[in-house]
Image (tube, rainbow, N blue to C red; front, side, top):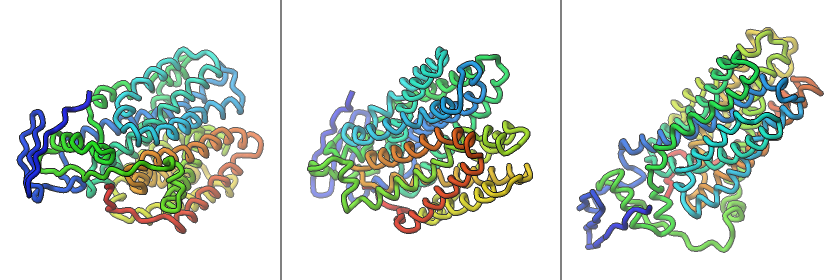
Length: 459
């Protein structure tokens, strides 16, 4: 149900707004700008709701790798099927993100944000009933579609509610939540690995738990005031701001845009926005290709590199992912976005290079280099949640995020599918060398065209 419309009476300097349960007599000249609002408990509610969904996203993607390591005998999986199932959710994520962006820009962030976790939980539970690779493939594509919707709306909604000076720190928690979910899935998978021949299905079932836990919090949150103001619903935007942040905060300016003559994707490729669109797609794609290809099959990669205990190496790798996400959150607002972006690509490429060339490599050094690579790339993943939304204006934000996610998931899905095949046919170090090339390309593109967006006004 839409909130009741406030009644506004305008004078020379006074705006009287009547909202249910809110007594507002605020001098407009004295009110704080929406972008500079003080942090309130409401901001914490939004952050927890967004982070809970993003944790579910990371868990849902992370659990497939460890579960597939236990499933081949039961599902008769060859390298091609392993690649298909490993990349299935990423293919689904492509479609979910691409379709959700324009829908969220047109109809709002909240309708999808409020209910996608319910569908995700239901599909996750159905994985426990799958008894063939084909059935599991269909479910994993559907789960990926739901994850794609959440990647778009969680970033957009939390970005648009968060005050400018705290944006990096708060949105950085999304990266921590995602990495936490991804790493937690691996730890849970290892813990359940001895639970019998159907251990892989029990692992997949657990992905329903975080999605269903966060659902009640999500359905209680309102629509983004920035989106409401941008669509001409200034009264509703004012009501939301006063009801959640207090009468001392001014609502966003009515920034309603004229009806577009062209679709949002075409506008993203127009001369005004195409360089930012290129940077968004390129940096996200070059970051996620090695992240998912190696992260999904990290145990198998380490076994292929003659590490005796690939599962132990995988635990260290995933712990480094979580530590890197936390470290990245700490520094994301303390350095320029552009410097962080280019530096992370460069360090990750330099770290991966000896892994692709040195054979055989001492096991402790191998694990240490993998851990540094995982930590640096995970730290830089904070920029996905902070830098990416800052690249686009409100009326294109969800569409821009969706297009970048779709591009990144195309690359990561293809690379995740190909990795076990390449390792089987050409060797693991060829696959690692390809990851080095991708990281170098990302660094070069960002050095050439990435703009600085720190402290940008979202309106």
